[in-house]
Image (cartoon, rainbow, N blue to C red; front, side, top):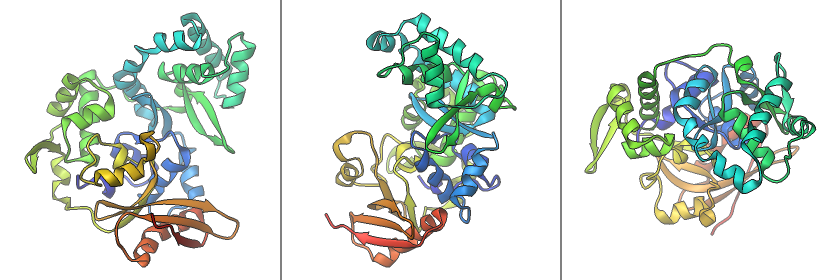
Length: 346
């Protein structure tokens, strides 16, 4: 797993990073913004946010029922290739939360009409529109309906308005639309995944995408990848990045970053005890990490103040505080505040 942190080589910018990865975990907006910033040195948070307003990237639910940032032009085919599998379980989920199939279809129609003509509205506005259309949105119903409309390729999540999500019609936001065949789509997705995450296994690719192993193997076979042996395990990689060499240096990464989220097997990045501290309670909520030469060294939490950003570091291995500062200074520059570090030993 040598190339992941290197990022795009010939396509700089937010779109270039999204294309390099294929998709970036993005259920937490602040996390994905720093995932981008960490790979675009010199850009500030306002500059990255402004780049997401251009319409060439978008957040939606293409894989595993989880929000990702993807190139807007690829959102439709990704939803059709990998997101469609999530629709198979939608009826059962609606039964659990008290919605009918007619409710879901009517919700798609209401949102499609309400956002027509380039409209962009907040999450609360969309829920009000559904409620006024006679659809119950209490509990988990509202979230399910917003997800369902996006999963159908009708809507998508646009950049926030203040602290609140906004929604748009995907066709209005994605003015350019790529339309590969299914075979081509599998190859594109496999190439992007193994280029940015490899060398790694087909099982990891299937887990990341939610594809069947049959489809995952077909994608790998068509993607022009190279088979490699890593400590006796069969893995695949993009031959163009095999000579990149190991990842070196210090990185301060957000919790929901592809560096850990992009794999099923994370033993090359951290020990089992360290991973238990990165995901305390095994609840799927990942802590931000400090990484050195590809290995997790600490977790960190930030508090944004008026005059400084205070970062609390919890070490998992021995290292010099100046090394942590080297890793965290780029984040402080990203948010435009002086850095203050505190250490909390376990």
